[in-house]
Image 1: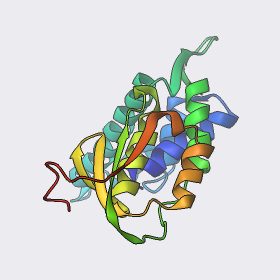
Image 2: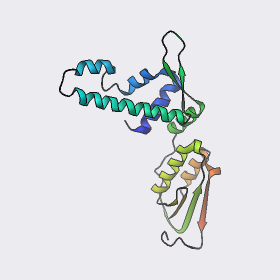
Image 3: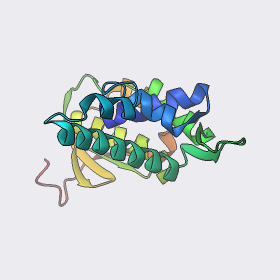
Image 4: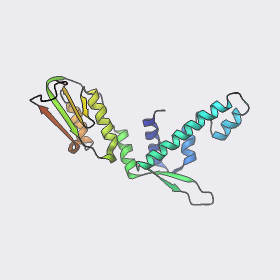
Length: 192
């Protein structure tokens, strides 16, 4: 399962219910067996025991690293259960709900590209809390034939697709993105 898909799945699950870490982990390790203990019992004594356990442990560590990253990005939050047995519970935050909404309605990337003889420069400054929009924008600009001059400055000789502008509007990105058409080349000879 790819990392982006894991993030979307965790946020989707936590949108509906607050869950303990073990239950979330069990969902992602279900291909190994219903639980870590059961897998260990089934594999004990076999030649491949250490190899299988190590791969399960690696997946487990990756999973916890992903939870930590989502927590640091304020997409999910950790709570302790109240009761006799203490469990760690995970809950989606308002920021996580926004990201989930973005992931579910993610704008397209397959715009029709039309060549143009005029150089366009796209400059953007998207806030850190909306980093995923920045990632999407860079990917789309690359697919549209633009080249990166700096991480937030791109240039190319293709027309800007109208659908791309509509997506910028729909996802509240217009205030962060500026598009210029250049009439004189200056120092941008390598792109022209």
